[in-house]
Image (cartoon, rainbow, N blue to C red):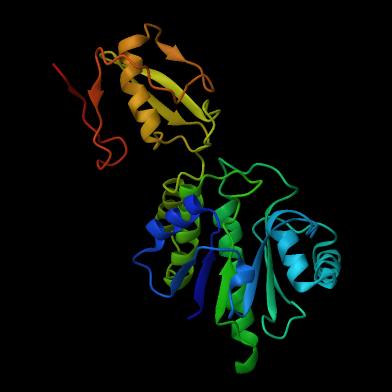
Length: 287
């Protein structure tokens, strides 16, 4: 089993990693840039589809390993992917550094852009781990990857919130260390629900374009996600659903108009218990 090091120079990201991975063996959170680590076999590049490694963590990777690495990454993309490597794929390549001999190139986005509200972090992290798995299956003992450093995938220009980054990366890690032995529609549905529950599809913007709120009777509203068709799992949205019943008289709110902001007044307000599963929370009115 490989050992995972999560590089998190930003305190909020380090805290999210600590919270998500606290009970997971063989995982260490490093509260600093990857360059300050003494020992690791492999570095993961949370890249773009074209191997342009001149910004964010990629720029630090290029500075650390040299510009030759970017050239060889791009040549590999041209040769194997005809010039554009899809998000959700990854490959292992020699870094040119004998102390840290491997790099995994795993795009989280086609070009630098926000991927908040998508499952790109999960897909890219899992692709990187699968590339390492395949590499180790075919490598001689002296060339196996045993310690890999991951940055916070999608947390930079991808603008994915720390908690969502950590939860998506954890789910990807668990899917590799505890793989299924049987594939069925039940398994597929459970996997989709698991990805959904990482808040991968919940943008952090004030107005969520995926949220549609509809009146369900008795002064109550229900918010669903237009991407999945399932009830919204955002606690902020759940609280807004309750308050919408107290403040709005219309019978439908169009998708994209649902705000995360909660009115300051408490008239008609009642609580949600965050520990209760989606769709099963009760409405207790304060008197």
